[in-house]
Image 1 (cartoon, helix red, strand yellow):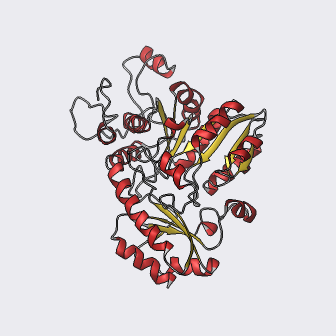
Image 2 (image 1 turned 60 degrees about the horizontal axis):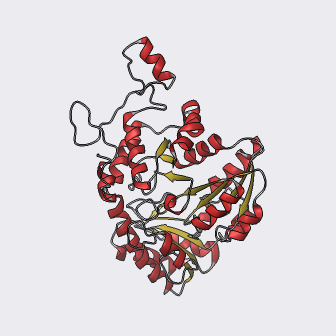
Image 3 (image 1 turned 120 degrees about the vertical axis):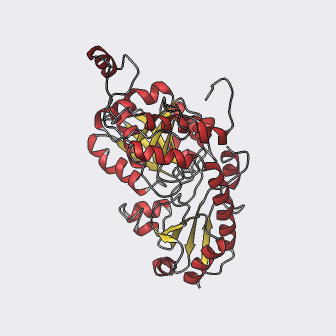
Length: 397
């Protein structure tokens, strides 16, 4: 695509990153090869030393994976993208590329459970300290800053409480601390929210979710300024190899072609479901940023408007009255909704976070994040909403 003209989001989602081969294919080429042939020993040496362009080895250079990175960067408004094997591999690659022993991280306490474990346990073993704070209390982030603070990490909306963090306000905290602001944009995708426009330094994705959109493959991404991403972050990927496969990149490229259409329609259905749940007598509370009753509704409306429309996303969490027993009753009575912890699929999914996605973190950490035993998280797909409501009504009733 020509860089002289600023193409629309949907055009970029379909065409960005494509470089046709001599066969002039219309769909992106799928390059299933482990290595690439060099014209001479001198050319091989130049490419291995990063002094000449060209593909070397699919652990760190592959045309299909590059196409995925270029397309996602075009959608997010980033200069560069490093593609990884999963969303958690993206978080790890970012942390290992930017942090060292003695550094300090401030992290939202309302992130995916594995992220908490990674920072607290795995990186903690290597001398990286982490302080967990509320996702929407900026004063807690400010108070947590230390001289060694190098990174602020936030997921907004949060998983699974759907809390909205003020990205612009956290950027101010990061600037004063001399730290980088890392934003996980998995729940919204660039179709709804563009964190770089609000001050983020790094954006993280689990491409497994809405970017693929059909629950087929794993993938992740780290995006940002070229010198930041293609330095130590890319260097860690090249050395350690948590790389995205060419096949997975090709599948996700196809998923991104329908990203805005899916996000718009799934968000519309999610809002309708959230309003229905609010009226149900067996539901204690509904957590969805598109509802006027959400405590950060106005902030969500400001931040989640990349498409020009306010969209709350496709994930709805709610608290069933009666704790775990009643929550599990809802799950066990689902006949259409898939009982799985994955999200972002065209198939609606449901999970009980306290015993699945956040089951490995301590009870105290769950309580601090507000994850109670009655909480359920639904990722709304593209089925008839009448059937999704009937599934939930069966268990709630």
